[in-house]
Figure (cartoon, rainbow, N blue to C red):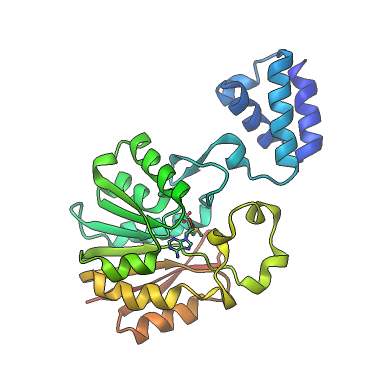
Length: 272
Ligand SMILES: C[S@@+](CC[C@H](N)C(=O)[O-])C[C@H]1O[C@@H](n2cnc3c(N)ncnc32)[C@H](O)[C@@H]1O
């Protein structure tokens, strides 16, 4: 089939020309800039591309189809059944990098998903990272990503409930970072297909989306060495409430940072 006909069909199905080119590039294993040079492809390749475009049209996240996502300029493997890293979360990494005192630090990434926050800090700031997540597949992908990014010796990933981990661990960290599930359970019916296709444990933050923050703060505070920070991603209208929790727990110099879309996205407090 002629590539230009396949592209025209794909564009009608998914509505975004760039996504069509990314899918073709991923499915054929051809660099993106070379897709434009292709003229025809065989039946088998055409079938693969059509299947991928049909999945996208049904709302399956592009990252699941491609098996990889870019975060902080680094490539992370993802698969169905895990949380796909979002651009908004880069705001948390940016802030964490600003306050990290030095390279020899240890960072705890709670609810680590595919390891994107902790591993970005390890790659970009040279720190050691421990990541904890309840999903076996998240831990499998986090470990693969550590190898892929060349920081395996600086990263450890543990499959466990974060609250049982925080209760049992004796170690201290310079930073605790977390992007926990924070979508209010009562907003389930408003969610777009991309979010719904991710496991509920990845996004459901219980009533008001606030179920995780009190425990992370009250248990986490014992695990940071002073001076150190707890840095949390939050959802819509949660920033002030989380900031109050941090202040009530005795943390100082609390603050809120907005993401590129001007939404309050990251909240932190310092143990002095
Ligand atoms: C919003 S995702 C964040 C993933 C990743 N940190 C990121 O920023 O892209 C939340 C993650 O929390 C994990 N999770 C949910 N409940 C958990 C719990 N009780 N203990 C550990 N991990 C949990 C989910 O499996 C999911 O990977």
